[in-house]
Amino acid sequence: MTSSSERGAATDAARTDAARAFGEVVHAVGDDPRPDVLLAAAARMLLRTTGMERCGVYLREPTTRRFRGRLGVPSDIDETVRRLVVGGRSDEVTSELISTARPVFVADARSDARMALAAPRAWNTASLLGVPMIDEDRVTGLFLLDGARRAQGVDAAMLEQVGTFGTLVGRWAGRTRRSAQLPSALRELEQERRAANGLHRIQPRLSALARGPFNDGAVLRVLADQLGREILRIGPTGGVEHRERPRGADGPPVALEPATIRALRAATADLGAGAVRVVEPSLERGLRRRWVVAPVVADEEPRGLVAVAEVGTPIARLDVELVRRVADLLGIGIERTDADRRQGTDHRHMRAADRLGIVPRTGRTSAPGERPPLLIAFVGAPGDAARSAETTLRLEERLLDRPGGRDGVVLRTDDGLVVVVPAPAGGDPGELRSALLELAPGTGLGDAWIGIVRTEAEEMDLGPALEEARRFAEWGRDRPGAPSIVTAADLGPARLLLTPRARAGQLAREVLGPLLEDDPGMADLLTTVGTFFATGRSVRASSVRLGVHENTIRYRFNRIRQLTGHDVVGDADTQLLVQSALVALEGGVRTDRPAPGDG
Image (cartoon, rainbow, N blue to C red; front, top):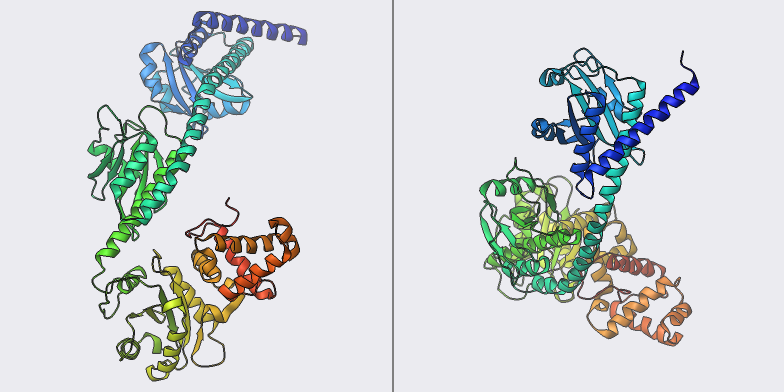
């Protein structure tokens, strides 16, 4: 029987032998920094120590519990090992190596239940020894040694020796990897800094291109110059519609084979507008490089994609975001171009019908010119009154086709009617309200509930406006009076409960109105309102923070009341409405000027 002191001496001897063996490996590697040189030398040392015949080295994948083959010793198994992955659900040997972080010896691989049946037959394996590489208390790699004949002499002392050896190799490999990653991390940090500066610099140019006539070549040229890479726009059928190279670029253009195009299109097939994906190299899919791809979507239809290949230096994370923005901008430009092509036949109102996904019963032409804002009225009524073709036709005749009537369209939906007409100067829905009150009894809509909203001429999606009109109508459904017509002015602060998130910008524009104009005086008024709420609705505290007299603050609020009709200081309901509009503005609502506090 072996005493504890004898066991301790045997353990110390095994660890000493492991340290000596590892020292020989380090001496043999010398100053060569390549990780594979160290791993191959360690594998040969283990074969010499254990008497096994073959050794495969496997390194842990970053995001899974699996280990991918890195190299094999001797060289005739290297190619096979590099194709293997171990650590699947049925691989109990690898599971035991991970859970115990200790070597595992399988004396009879053909009968041991821990072994997958196919592996011993394929490798003619009689016995197997697994040795974990450990770094920072984590199994980061495996040495899997096997032999065609059963190995002899793998006792507790040898398991201790190879276990210690694996830990020493794992720690050395981890330090080598981290040392090699430090310069790369510093380079990546510098690249992200340059990308952030470039993004800040070119954002005004992209904004200007978005407001002007659509030119996809100019947009892609900005992206190519910023990234210093060739930009490809691939059309919906798979052809390359546009190539844009950075200024001063030399060398051949990026080769784009049919298999590569198919792989990139497949990678974006499940993406919608505003998405981007980094596609890793895959020889199986025909991708020899890393790519960044973003779909171009217009009118909810795929219109191709923007693709950038990683050639030379890696693509920065902020550059990936820039590719997404450019693809988004191309989609908006295509929508605007398509809308302009439809200008000849009811350019705005037919487009409204198209965006709402509703086919109008009839169409009229409208005179070309400035596109006004729209009023959208949703009309619901008991029974089938608001869904019958007869009601639609009568309302069209009396509202749109009568002498002195207005241009527009009446659309029938599953749950009611939608009236789309240009907004009068100032956008006041009062005229449409009066017309609907007058015409409702004669069109079978005497008991109707109606919601009216205003939407900007350049809104790219009128669906949220229709949803808000539906909510307004439903709000007034049980109110006394027939028909019941509800507008934003009727709701006051209650509008906050009914406004969809996508319509927050419209709410801000309607409530703040002239304060959003690009004018220094309006900017002062808007800043004063923001400061008033930031200081707990205190005129005195606002004057201290802004460095002006209290009377100046009161004068500004009087001016705000004259411009917008809102008594911000004296009315609690108005304060709730205005503060909510400010929140919408600061949350990213698109206007022609920055939100208060943006510098």
